[in-house]
Structure formats: C-alpha cells, structure tokens
Image 1 (cartoon, rainbow, N blue to C red):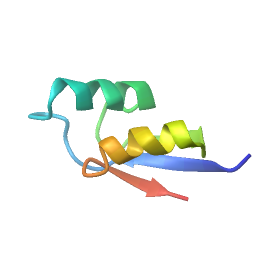
Image 2: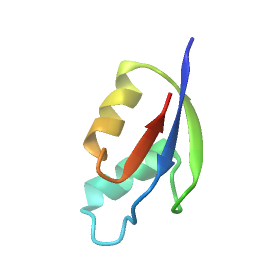
Image 3: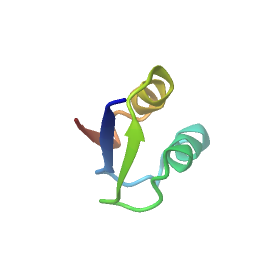
Length: 58
C-alpha cells in the first residue's frame, strides 16, 4: 500500500486539546518532525483535522 510522509510545520502551542491529541496520534511531537503512515481514509481524516499545522509529502 502507498505511504505518505507528514511533517509538522507549525507549533502546537495555542492549539485546542483535540488538535494536540490528533498530532500525538499521528506521532508528531515536535516541530519539523517527519513521520510515515500508510495512505488510508483514517490517516487522511486526521490530517484534514490539523491541515493548518502539517504538510503532506506524497
């Protein structure tokens, strides 16, 4: 299955708790950290929730 890379580009400071938990579930704990996940609907939904804090590298 295809994989996508997700990079946190903006700070989580000042973000609501649910968005912080979403970043944690994606594995993003610090700025400029890159994680790799399988490209599926669940991951896309999480990315959509915090799209203003992350960048997707396909």
